[in-house]
Amino acid sequence: MSDVQAETPKIIQLSGGIWVRQEIDNIAWIDMGDYGLVVDALEHVEKADEVFAAIERDLGRVPIRYLINTHTHYDHVALNDAFVGRFGCEIINAETTEIGPTGKWFEASERRVLIQPTPGCHTDQDCIIWCEPDRVLFVGDIFGWGLIPLIAQLRPDNTQHLLETYQRLIDFDAKVVVPGHGPLATTADLSRWLEYFDWLVGKVSAAVAAGASDSQIIDEIKPPADMLHWWRFVARKHADCVERIAKSIRRGWLEAT
Image: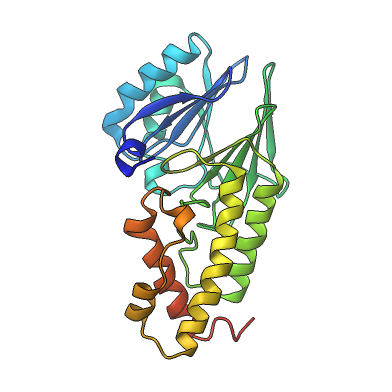
């Protein structure tokens, strides 16, 4: 899928009761049977009427009871107040709601939905959402089509935590993975990112040891051929990953492991 195609708004029905409005920012609505549940709330308040019309068309008279944010960055919460004003729903996220380490289940006649904290991969408020029996996994910004999601500098502890969390996500064996932004993904894409990260660390480490500058390393380490179609990967993400890893290695990141 080209970047233009990925960024053209479209509503994708994943099953008999899950819809994703996929664009640069993604939002989803889920028919639980007795009520509706929404995941994430975009960043453009001017899209509220468009989104509400689509939700009401798809869910009909099913009331929206909950809006879950995968984390609380603005591009995931901008419509929170509008949802509360329109539907009177409850906002659920790691800041507003007490969520235990094993997560919180929402159960109704059609399906079960789990919100589970996965902090420290992108923000301290990261949560994933798992839909049964559809096997749809919402991962917020933990998966970014090639980006290293950690905002902080790479350290041995947070890098290991990120890799372990990815394995947890892979273990769900989801049929569909919904990132916070861009095209829908798969469990295979999560696995491929782990392989890419390991490969990139090895390539950059060798280049740093050989005395290459950051700009030389960025120029020499090309994106893998099978990832060239990943959304914004070549234009924005691969070079950023190379540079972040190179700078971390020069700070002694790998020696500290």
